[in-house]
Amino acid sequence: MNLPSFPDNPTPEGIVAQPVLTSDGVRLRSAVWRPAGPVRGTICLFQGRAETIEKYFEVVHELLERNFAVAALDWRGQGGSERRLRNPKKGHVDDFIEYERDVEAFMQQVVLPDCPPPYFALAHSTGGLVLLRVARRSRLAFTRMVLVSPLLDLGAMNPPRKFVNATCSALSLLGLGDAFPPAARLARLEARGFEGNQLTGDARRFARTVAIGKTAPTLTIGPPTIGWLSAACRAMIEAEDPAFAASVKIPTLIVAGSEDRVVSPLAIERFVREMRLGSQIMIPGARHEIMMEREPIRELFWAAFDAFIPGSED
Image (cartoon, rainbow, N blue to C red; front, side, top):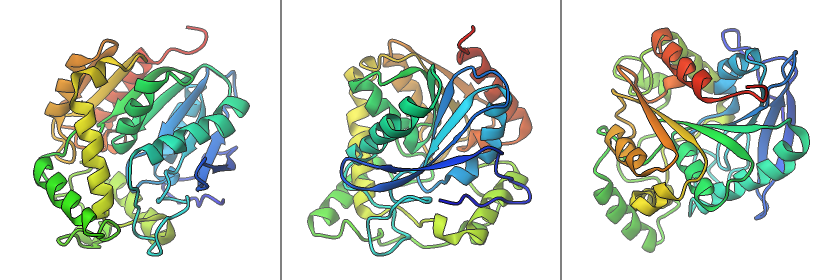
């Protein structure tokens, strides 16, 4: 359960790593931090696909400075959590309900017993879609949620979702759900390079993410499997129903980037219009990983976060 530290990305002090066991028997890795001063509540941090707790150390530092406790989770199939398939580079699920089980176990075993209320969710990309799925069924314990670049449809860099869904559904029926898509390549992030990357416009933070993979390659995974893509498409299709957005009863702020080509900013705008308790901020010039972006973009993000997430004394 060790979390490695990096010269440009040190582990925040006071970390308590905790194992989590889901209802279907999957072992997950989680971590909790408490601030040095008075605690304003707990931010539950949910990452995107293929990410790790280590990638968010800077964000954890910034939340601790705001006097929030932080509880973070590695989804099943990635980071330091258990892999389902023999090939550890395949972060696979058959259905997004499996991620919902991760959230439930994390909240019941780590957050509710060990972390001070009130509880707020901060989620990125795939994590954002999972939290919306959870929130439509139950409020859990979250007072508010901030979702960054949630996966509500595929962005411009990807093939159309209808094509991906039809192709991956057919291949899954043929028993190929555990395989990588035919055109997928196991190219490492550093091999693709900073120039032309679709994640961030900040070269230093891009290099920091690359360093995690070089130093701790067991934390990384490759492209999504055919089955994962099929599950993601089904989850996105469910979220298109206007009743889905209207059923989310937790006040939610969605932050999107105008230059995001990984997920669809237009789909995010459509979703927010159907929400009863939702609002959106579009940050000009931001790519997909807004919390890993250039400082002017991150300043806008944190200003929106601070205005939306109240502490227990507010």
